[in-house]
Amino acid sequence: MDLFSSQLNEILVETFNHILQYEEDLIKHSQNIDLSIGEMHLLETVGKNNNNGKTISDLAQAHNVTLPSMTIAVNKLVRKEYVVKEKSPHDGRVVYVRLTQKGLRIDRIHQYFHRRMVDEVAKEMSAHEKEVLIHGMEKLNAFFNRKLSKIHDQ
Image (tube, rainbow, N blue to C red):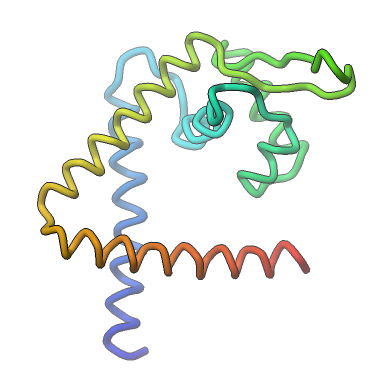
């Protein structure tokens, strides 16, 4: 591995792990939050688009897990009263998952955490550094999207 590849690999892995650890530590030290980081991210997905609801299939696809695994995860959040399952008024076979008031409160806290994290990172950068970082992250994201698409197509 050349120097750039080695450095990039180390930075990507370390940054990913630090972000997850930071989020997990904040959750652990928060009062009245009985969620894992995975459950927190699932709530975030459910709440997107003004909490209009997502099907179990939508959620499974977004998190790249099987339907049975997502059903178990959603049912756990139902028991914890963070989400509800509601039948579609147009098609009774379709069930939507939506955040409860408790889920909405936690999702707002999680969004606030992300805004604060990004703001704190950004304040230490010049305008040029921000532009270069965004450009590089867009390329990195596009690369992983292509790789994931190829895997899912197989």
